[in-house]
Length: 93
Figure 1: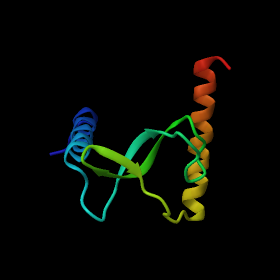
Figure 2: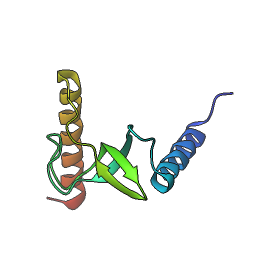
Figure 3: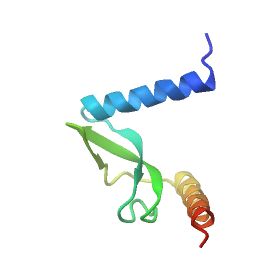
């Protein structure tokens, strides 16, 4: 049976809360939307961006040192630029 987009979003939210509460699988990581305190993987600080995170005991930290290929770099930079533009528009700057 196909899930509605609302059911898919609810399932994703539940899975995220599960990982945050119980931690993710050892040796793995999960993607989490986090507000960056400093530039990470070339993405500027101050925006909410999906990052690879490790979660242990309810605390998350961004996984460091992953290699980014050219295709992913292009998409990441494009998304960051769009988010910065949206923030600027929302704040009226």
